[in-house]
Image (cartoon, rainbow, N blue to C red; front, side, top):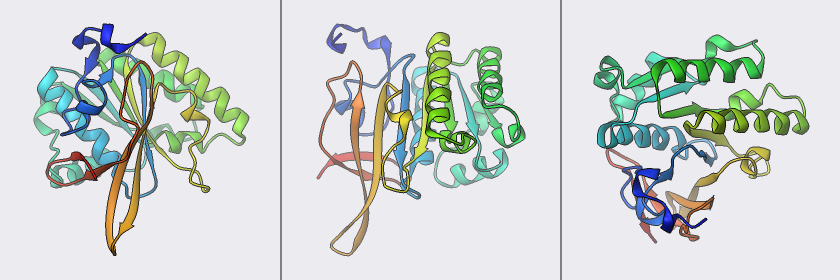
Length: 228
């Protein structure tokens, strides 16, 4: 179904300059969205800024689950980059949890725990940063695919809008999670005339007539996407 028939309230604007224009106004509610790319491409910064903007501008509530660093370190680093969740945490608009405490527990238990937190917080958005850290517990691609099917079904059943950061495989490709998600947005570092730059492309977004070309991505106090 074309999103031309959907009401605007069925999307959450990202607030990222230039992004909403190329994805018909924002992320479809209740869908599973992947932000994927190599190390240092800005996946965490972009995911956190989308959530920050959604809370500030659209009145959303969120749970942000970080696996790769402690919550204090995570908050401090983001604040230095212009995304300060302090007041939002105090107001109960976002809950940041450290998935490190779940190491050694079953993968399904991790997801069940996250959904329990989402329910208690009455959150409309869930961020998992990063999904890759969870998938490392899977020994085979079959286990990864089975786990992703379970995750996708659970998240869709709850109707929570989910943003997950994902690292590319060693061969530069996304794993089975790319096929079992509603959208895939790719961030890539590249060299242009001896200058280090980042580019962005929407590889897929179900129900959306999105741009199919690369855009320049600028990450700083403000994040913006523009045409080359």
